Amino acid sequence: MTNKALIVGAGGVANVVAQKCAQNSDVFGELLIASRTESKAKTIASRIKNIPVSTAKVDADKSAEVAALIKDFKPKMVLNIALPYQDLAIMDACLETGVDYLDTANYEPKDIAHFEYSWQWAYHERFKDAGIMALLGSGFDPGVTNVYTAYAKKHHFDKMDTLDIVDCNNGDHGKAFATNFNPEINIREITQNGRYFENGDWKEIPPLSIRQDISYPEVAVRGSYVLFHEELESLVKHFPEIKRARFWMTFGDEYIKHLTVLKNVGMTRIDPVKFKGVDIIPLEFLKALLPEPSTLGENYSGKTCIGCQITGQKDGKPQNYFIYNVCDHAECYKEVQGQAIAYTTGVPAMLGASLILTDKWRGKGVFNMEQLDPDPFMAEIGKWGLPWKELFGKNAELV
Ligand code: NDP
Image 1 (cartoon, helix red, strand yellow):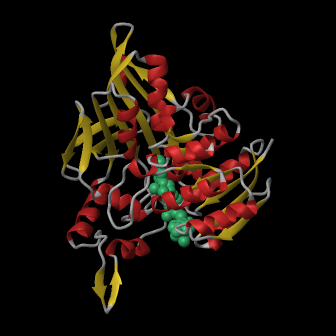
Image 2 (cartoon, rainbow, N blue to C red):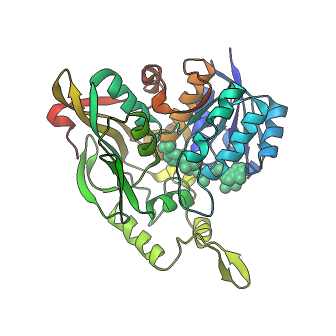
Image 3 (cartoon, rainbow, N blue to C red):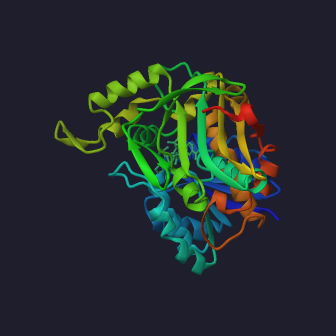
C-alpha cells in the first residue's frame, strides 16, 4: 500500500529526500513539499515525474500552520527536513493530528547555540499516549552512525568500550568558503566548545583544540578535530557500557582560517547588533552572503567517508571494528542534483520513514535510531545508495 507523506523544508537535504521517496514508490504514493519559500519546493517537485507531488507555503515555526496542512493533505507521516528550530512546533502539530514524525537534527533554540535531546525526549509520554511514533535524527550523523553502533553491538560485540565516530568530507566545491548544510546550524555547531564522553562524564574542550590525522579508507589522510555531536548523547544513554565516545570531523586549513577570522570579527555572533537603527544577527547576515548548500553540487568532486570505530570484547577476546560508507559528490549530483552531504542525510531520512510506514520499525513514543532493530535498515540502505563496509583487527584502527 502506498502512503502520502508531508515533507517540510525545501533545501539541499529535502531535495534528496523527495527524490528518494519517489524512487521508493511502492511505499510513498504521494508527496506534499511545504516550505517557507514555495518556489524552492516547486523546483524540487519539478524533478519528480512518477508520483503526484504538490507544494505549499508554510511557516513551520507556527504549529497551527503545520497542523492545518496535515488536516488538509492527510499524510501518514511528516518528515521534518527544515531546521532544528522547527522540531518542537512540528512535533506539536503531529500530536494534534495523530501523525508519525521524523527529523534529522535535534532541537535547538534560536537564541542559544545549544542542542540536546531533553526537549524532544520530553515528548515521549505524549507521543506514547497518542499512539504515534517520533523518530529522531534519521540522517547520517546522527542517523546511520547510530544504526551502525546498534548493528555492531548486535552482531560483533558482547561489550563495547570505546566509540569514535569519524566524519570525513574530502570533497572540493571550488568555493573559498561554504558550508555543506545550513550555514547557520553548521557554524553554531563548530564554534561551540567541543565535548566528549569519558568514564561517565562529559569533558569540555575549547573549539577545535584536539586534532589528529586520520587515514580514511578509500579516501585520504585528513586532519580531524574532536567536536560535540548530538548522537553521542543518545548513544551513551542507550549503550551505558561505552566508556569513551568521541566524534571527529575533518576541516581543511582554509576552512578553519576563514572561520577563525569570521569568529574574531564577530560575524558568527547570534545576539542582535544595532546597524543603522535595525537589529541584525551577524550569523543570519553571514548566511545570506554564503552560497546555499543546495547549490554546491554542480562542481563538487571528491568523496566523503563516515563511519564508527568501536573497540570492546567478543567471545572473551578484544575486538576492533570499523564500519563505514564512502559517498562520491559527483555521483550524487548525477543522480539527484545534490552533493554528498545532502545525499548521505536524505537517503536515511527516506529509509527511516519507509521502515515506519511499512511497520518494520514501529513503536509508540519518541525514539532514537539505535533503539530500533538495526537489521532491516542495514538490509536496505545499500540498495538506496549508501552501501557499507566493515573492517576488523589492525585494519579497523583509524584513530
Ligand atoms: P537548508 O538551509 O538548505 O534548508 C532548510 C529548509 O528549511 C529551507 O528550505 C528553508 O526555507 C526551510 N525552512 C527554514 N525555516 C523554516 C520555517 N520556519 N518554515 C518552513 N520552512 C523553513 O538546510 P539543509 O537542507 O542543508 O538541512 C536540512 C536539515 O538537515 C537541517 O536541520 C540540518 O541540520 C539537517 N542535517 C542533518 C544531517 C545529519 O546527518 N543528520 C547532516 C546535514 C544536515 P528557505 O528556503 O526559505 O530558507
